[in-house]
Image 1 (cartoon, rainbow, N blue to C red):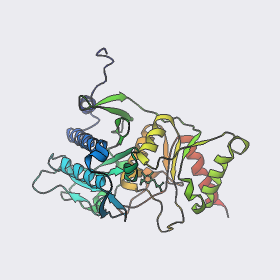
Image 2: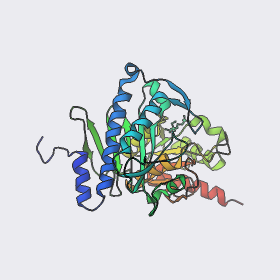
Image 3: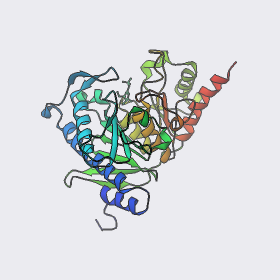
Image 4: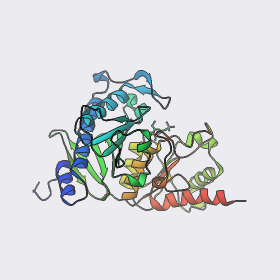
Length: 341
Ligand code: P6P
């Protein structure tokens, strides 16, 4: 492979982004550290039954969900990797009730890191792709010991976001606000290599991703929207649709980022007190930034997800994201139903 066509490493990409003034040295270090942690998680996930890491940990998280052993392992890997570098002021995780400031024994930086250490972990025991999702915010000026309230920033204020999908290949998807880029792990070298620049989500799609078993619990607008998808070309949409649902957000979003589609986890009346299943701060926000940076759209059915002002660290939100024109149509169904007398 000639030097010109040889893919560059994540390290070189980040150095070039810093040289271009797109990121700071601390943000470069932060992303390198998170990528290194993802490599460690990839090794643990890849061992499967041989690693003695499958199955439940015997504990529960703040979401009331049973933790898998790998949930705990992945969380610990990210906490340890980010503790001593001096680039972070604090961290928040799906697996921890409250955020954690960087320990006093280490220097603190100006960034806040939020993550779902192993999303889709219910799929681990059946060998289906899972992933790590992360979001980076600035620590508010003058805050030296960040608390939960300092993480409550709208998604549009993220300075970086990404995920790592542990699938047939281990692939890191990253944005620092200048497009979305794909890095594939070269296992022989142990390096993430740039394999696609400027990923773009096709504006239209014929593929939707949703858990159809909840259909009877959806609100009327959602019922009508999906009914019209299922009628196909004989109906108001004028075309037939295909459906995919991996039940691992990282894997479903990666497919959509790669070939288009719409991912939906709407509100349902199974538990009316919950606005949705997915969490805003470390699932919906980072995925929405990636999708928007790739020319797609992301709403809660009514408004742009990145404009939502959070009021709780683990708050949930309905999610409609992917091909822009399809997300706009799904959102319009909801707004038109809302406007009915
Ligand atoms: P359901 C995984 O538990 C997750 O948080 C997302 O990764 C995924 O999209 C969703 O939940 C799957 O939910 O209700 O279909 O199991």
